[in-house]
Image 1 (cartoon, rainbow, N blue to C red):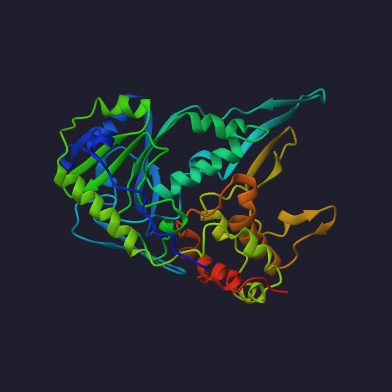
Image 2: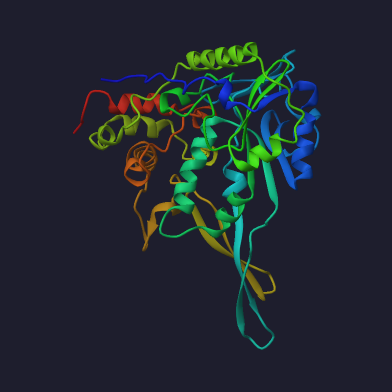
Length: 383
């Protein structure tokens, strides 16, 4: 039996919040974070999309901007709304700020006498505050924490950035057509993993602290008491955001169903449409595959050992000892989907999908992970 498992993860209650920040005083949040030593990073419109970059003034936030998303489609439109966060998401999540797309790990140098020495490269230690994090991306961050911090080997580069990040979440009230975080149980209400959480209304923000760091910042904000009307409006908008989501996965654990259908003809069908471009893995907030290479200087005196994002859709990803294990798009797409929705349960105790829908919107041919999962998994096993 397949179900939508509809649940928007509960309402905002009076005992959860710290106060109300009037819209006219929102700049105070950025100023307070700057005074505490943080470089603020927030959403901005660039090249027709909402992206995250250094943020100094609230005037560059995407005021009144809405996003229209569909399979293979992403468009922005202006509205008269005073809100800065009335959109679902852009191509980025938290991932680029913590697990960077291209990073030098160490450097080798050759002296004039021919001796070689190896030099560690330390990650930057600056404090970063990310403004406008969504519930789905907090869930993805928890999965990245498990991979990079809680295994047998801690990744020091991720750990250094993770320690210095301050997260300002915003509850999602305007989901895109491609969103299905209700189905995965990860949104639209941000309930954990943040330092501050904001419920955006037309006249300001319900503010909730989620950590000691959050309490410290909140204590310096010009907050006023929130009203029952504020809470009621915020909760109604989140409930409506949950009801608007029409996409869903068949169930939250597809492990057995996927592995019972490894020879399903749908794998060939999707391979005829998939370009193996890797867009889905780049925009996915939980994918963590990477490759490592050496970049040698032209004079031959030094080289950088770097890691950069990779994808299970590339030929090199499964190249081992002169042999490419997954030589075609069918097996590469199957690897991505069965790992993301299946074997992640064995590794991390849950699915690797948080329902953000980015892989649907940013796929150039509009492949929909919810549709493919439903086609492959429904009806039991397949020989």
